[in-house]
Amino acid sequence: MISVFSVKMSLRKQTPSDFLKQIIGRPVVVKLNSGVDYRGVLACLDGYMNIAVEQTEEYVNGQLKNKYGDAFLRGNNLLYISTQKRKM
Image (tube, rainbow, N blue to C red; front, side):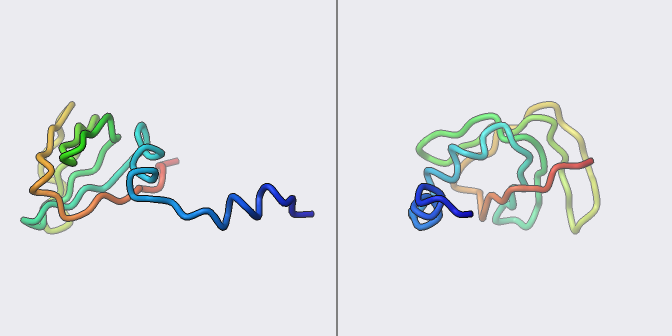
């Protein structure tokens, strides 16, 4: 049985800011304008979309190139941020 509360929650629109707040601490894929992907755990972000990623892996043309502990990515270089399924 579906409750009225769950129906109202599913109809509520989510802003991009709400989405970003919800994914802090979760695995993400960050694609830069250059085409390079960074995968790791989103640590924090600011109003300019500058972000910090932990346990970062750098992928160029789909191939792992480097691993970093922490990476700081400048917001004006970001194409998108996407959630990544957790590895089992």
